[in-house]
Length: 338
Image (cartoon, rainbow, N blue to C red; front, side, top):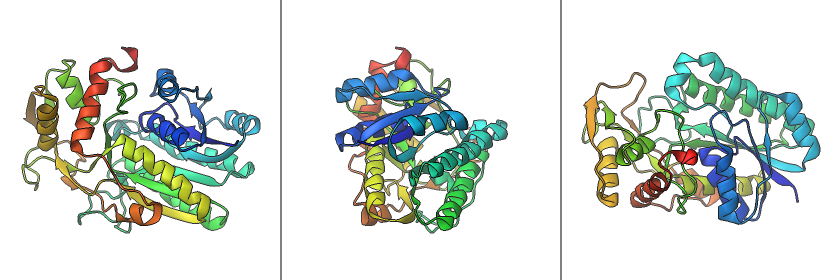
């Protein structure tokens, strides 16, 4: 049976998606260069699913390595997660982001085309909306980017649209993620950031488990109910399920579609801290510090198109998100190295 190739397959969202794909009856092949992930994630996925996942250690920028993968495996579609994803780092190392994210994806698509594999689910991001003026954010909202990471995702959206227009055999789903949080309910896999976390939930978890003294809350003077930034947090298992639904949609529908994956509900930083603390009965000390450059006040999705096209909507609530994030952190205080 042909496999679904997951690039960046050992990463946070990809490892959870692998489980959902296997449960939905797909075969999976993972590809990762382990620059920002650990092979243990795939071992844990095998533990959860009761079967091992074949994987290839390779970089998406390495065309010869990709050729070899497509020559030696039967692949029917690609779910493309591989990419650098830290906003702050992208402003310090823009060339690395454009090389890895943009050039790497162009290389991948070139190899896919040569092998007649023209089904692609692409990880985009809500960062392509820039500082959106209207909430909730619909898919037809104006697009812009405020940093090289967002810019790389936006460039790729244009590149993939051009590719599909040039060859209608391509079937492409561009998934614009909002803020993935939480972990598999087993606590065996979860978000495992290198060094200081860039995202809120792993930072809260690391403070709660005693790895970090306190959470820095960047700004309390935004035009939001409590002054702290508001985001659309989505459980990673809901997000993973969205990829399965997108793939099933592409098996029936030609063309290119861009779809938000979010809950449609915004929570502030302080609401997240309070929920984590109360539901898990653990202290999360924090301090208010200056805003971060490039941060925006409010961002949450209009998620109706995903329901209309894919029959998908987020099923898990904030309590599930904070409980599952804490279970993963408690069982793995040092991530996969625990």
